[in-house]
Length: 365
Ligand SMILES: *Cc1c(COP(=O)(O)O)cnc(C)c1O
Image (cartoon, rainbow, N blue to C red):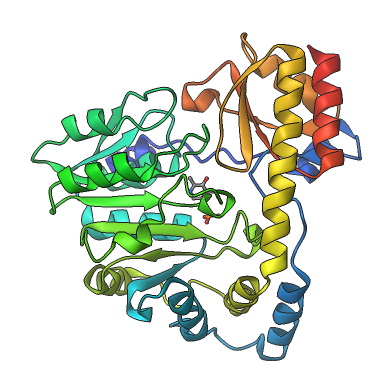
């Protein structure tokens, strides 16, 4: 007798859709038989791996047959020093998506509600839906988090609020004053997850570094990643910073060895390579100007962005434009799954990569 395995799955899982990643270069090569492809689709750092990181990874080969340090002691020590916090406040993850999932699984049950913004990073609904919790999507304000509307959405079932600052895929950001006021108003029994995947790109003080707020707000969990400005997307390493108590809970459900030895070593080396990070920021600023200039030339509007990407409004269904760009060997990111069918998200690349996009879009439109 056969069995309907879809019906057997957890109800939350039945409703899930797989995460749609940016199209890999190798896939487009296979599909269209073209080479010389530029990928501006996953907000990756275009500057290659840091040389210091490469050396650190190579040193790990000799013990490559051993399990990594399950506690990530040296990486946590380096992070603790950088942020002036205790190692007992840091939870390491296989990318920050791993910690986002841990945080949700730690606190959220099927009868809870989880609040996040319209156009917010899709991993928040994904991890909450998997648990079977009720998703409360709050309409965005000017493409960003509407903090007052999020406060109004709180009920006695609310367990968690996700805020990305800056937000992906819109690039919008929130300054210190509104965020602090928000934190002061959220009841202490609701966990606020502040996803700061892109804050390294913001150097003018317009975004608060909320790790410094942890002593004031014990319900705050800040997540950060090495995948963007530090250029370690392939290695999968990110972390949460929280109170010791919450960190202790997260570590109870963390998979042992969730961060591999190469990523642990790379994370330490990346913190030491200041020149790499500075260059990443400058290349991003210049590339951002280059893409914005092309928008102005073409009469396209865009959402001002504090990240390493620009989300552009083409004033028409953007999917055919995306497809035409693919045929010119330029991969960008459709965001129709974020209720933004007329937009495409362009990750900032190296100058020649950005130029490939500019030339292609000029021909396509
Ligand atoms: C890219 C991104 C992350 C980072 O994901 P990793 O798992 O660390 O690679 C987290 N949050 C947002 C909003 C992002 O855009």
